[in-house]
Image (cartoon, rainbow, N blue to C red; front, side, top):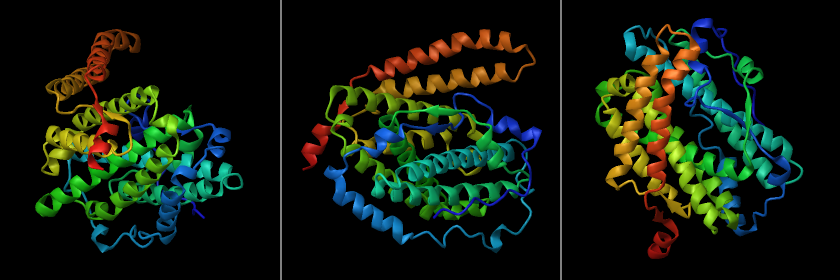
Length: 357
């Protein structure tokens, strides 16, 4: 069973509500069609799912998320924009993990008696997400803030996604999370002088949770022929890849100071994460994006530049209606760039799988 998340020691403050304001880059809370989910035919991937269920039961990381003495000190040495960028990173990551916990926990409750394998699987994934969110919330406490997760649960709008969309998006979320964590971890192994906070030492085992969750959703995807054998599935695969990659690019460049403190170039980090995630997705999706096309990253970077210009408008003291009017041309240009990326010739991932065989 999943234990309750640790109660935060601080209440959410007015100064910090900005960190979880609703915008296009904010992690969202989701719900889905539980009736349809319970009726999913998993027989095509039954062996794979049973193997992964055994791994989840083993709970290899059950003793991993325990704070040690290296956290017991002041962190006032991190100051200014870099400190705020790191706090924003922790807040966004915590909300994202907590969003996953709530979705998985609700799925486990609804499916427990109707689809026992899925019910237990989602329960165990909720356990992992709860640990991650609680650990991140404690890390925020070291920097003078925490998120009242109970308050957040009651005061967030839940977005409905069909289970098919949930499978696509959660798969990508877990796999891109794996690459983010492991790239940062490997970088800091080579450059320990940039490891300014103990949290990063936990990223190797942490990313294995992300990888296992992604593999579970890959099995769910491949168990449903309509998610990878149809022309519609090829369009949806590319759509969700582009959505996740665009969000990643915009977010990374908004928090460039955080990556620079780690000794990472934000653009190079973003490029590597996207390329690795796209390569990984080719093992599950029928079609992926051509990240080697020179237009691909050029247009994503242009979207990031436009987003940063909109952030300057947001920071002004002008009325909301005027800000919205001023941002509209930028938003339309971003949509135009994303549409041009979507229309680039894709890569047939099924053909690649055939070549590997």
